[in-house]
Amino acid sequence: MEIRPIFSALLRNSAGAILVSLQIAITLAIVVNAVFLVKQRVDTVSRPTGMDENNMFSVRLTGFGKDFNFESMVREDMVMLRRIPGVIAATPTPQVPLSGSGSSTQFFSQPNEKGNKEPVAYYGADEQGVETLGITLASGKPFAAEDIEYREKDSPALPKSGKVIVTKSFASKLFPNENALGKTIYDNLSQPVTIVGVIDHMQGSWLGWNKVDHVMLQPQVGPGPSTQYIIRAAPGQIDRVMSDVEVALKKAFTNRVVGKFHKFADMKQRSYASDTMIVVILGVVTALVVIFSALGIFGLATFNVNTRIRQIGTRRAIGARRLDIVRYFLVENWIVTSAGVAVGCILALIGGYVLSTHYGVDRLDLYFLVGGVAGLWVVGQLAAWQPSHKAAQVSPAMATRNV
Image 1 (cartoon, rainbow, N blue to C red):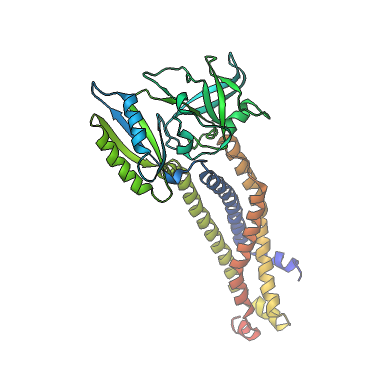
Image 2 (image 1 turned 135 degrees about the horizontal axis):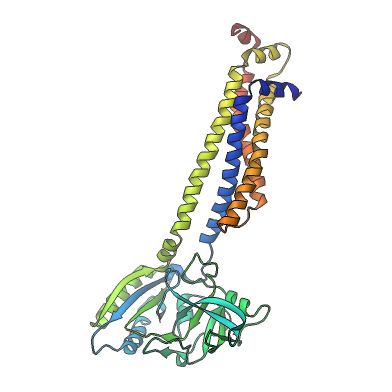
């Protein structure tokens, strides 16, 4: 097949071809960057938390009255909760991971704010903290009961035991290419603590934070009068355990308020709500853009067929096969699509650059651009197939009658 007649036909009716090419270019730029953003969001939402979040829940409690004793309440509650059937473990803590609320600070690998510096989210926990969270220690061991400090008032002081458990991600930043177990780290007051356990992986409270896996557990409880309990239930028993725990907590003490219960899975879903919404919106927009682009290609191909009945009939009369007619219009459509794709690649790269420099998004992966080009070529050919097939059905006699 000669390409020259196709180019001549396109030049005679260039307005429609130019508009469709521009539509394809804009479609490619939008779709490639949108799909890239969706992939990033999906990867973010599907990240493992490192915890057994599907079987965990939390509840806040606040005591009141002159006779209220915070330490006694926590100790008695822990004994009671751990005896409830279906409860694997329980621990008190001031803040809860995945909740969007927490505390953070900075630690240094050397005293006097020297050496490597890294931020970390920290949580208080007792001797069942590791088991309650369902996390895995890559090295070291959990806190012992004698390590736990019950505080009577807020203080910037680190645990009296001088022990902490940290995530591998945090430890590797302070001590690159070293085993952090047994290492000493320092806060901004040069107070030292020793790493007695390294968590393989765990997420903290703020899932949008780029240091979300920088977590520290401290053997501290309190001070009151408020605290939260994290309870881990046996698989498949979380609803029953939540009900039993609520009844037990309300019966145990009268001089306190038992707050709402929150499943960790629900907190995770709420924390990722904006990411999920972005995925849905971008997915819908991408689908609509591709559909409208396909309709534009279909419309141009249909118009070209309807305005070239005589030309088609003439070619059929001089021996052109139906396959030749179909191939002619598919090639013509491919040329229009390719012109749009060429411009679209430039627009897509410019859009990706703007997103990365002004909005902190990762640079566009060229694999997505290649996939977008291939995808639009396929969409273009599919959209032009029906009009091309219709053109092939035109007979020489029908073309003559329509002249």
